[in-house]
Length: 332
Image 1 (cartoon, rainbow, N blue to C red):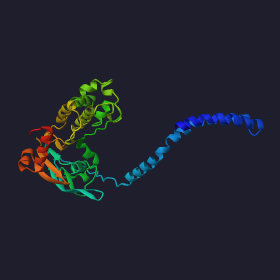
Image 2: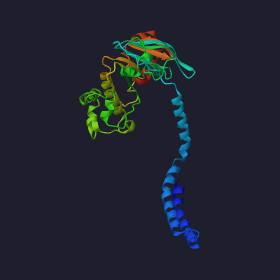
Image 3: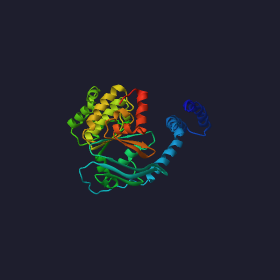
Image 4: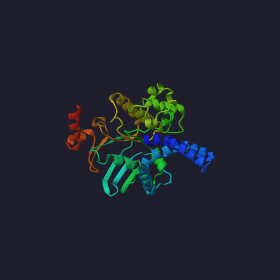
């Protein structure tokens, strides 16, 4: 690119004497020479910009292919029927799921009782995140059913299902917009005082007020202008404002520093009051108080029970806790 930038201006040095010779010989006119000279100066910059994209053309073709593949996928079927009932019990009944041809969940049956905390633990790749993703209909089950209020979630209008579920992930995405609008996404019709109250409950009000324009401060794409812990608390404020009865937590404190962890734990406590919780646990000491702990291994529920019961069994969970205690010094 630097070579082209150097060569293009030099074309004038060649064109002027050659063009002058053509004019003297009568091959061309002075007007033609002036026109060509002006065009040569104006075409250089667009040509350089076009050349700068040359290396991206192969990537563009690949991305177009991927977009076409996504567009060819069959859309999730939705149902416009009304959805009634007040219970927020969630049941998985003999659920099987496969990524393409590989089955990763093998007949999973479980129940999330209303107002309780259910934790999923186990090695990476065992199927914990898949279970949470199926509940939110990121995918549909291969066979079996997932029931909410006794209704198969595939028969619940997708918008209604999403109204009933809030999700907090380790990796948070915030939009390049004001802090206020990022929180208000949880419930766009909320009053300003409700947004501010959600920020206070999520323990992010104080640092928001220290920003240049407080709630009207525009943050960077993806929350780039905030720390990971600050972005996490704003996402929790969004969920608090939404106030869904079911909350899925992919343990939000797993990748933050100790200073932010205590704030996030307080924010999560506010979020989870009276909710039905499904927690994907990475730090076992944070779920010792769970009503039900399920050990997921190779796409199946290997063990199930509260902390005391699983420790008394002396199986997979006991070994996990023991190893964690040795490596971190945690004592139950």
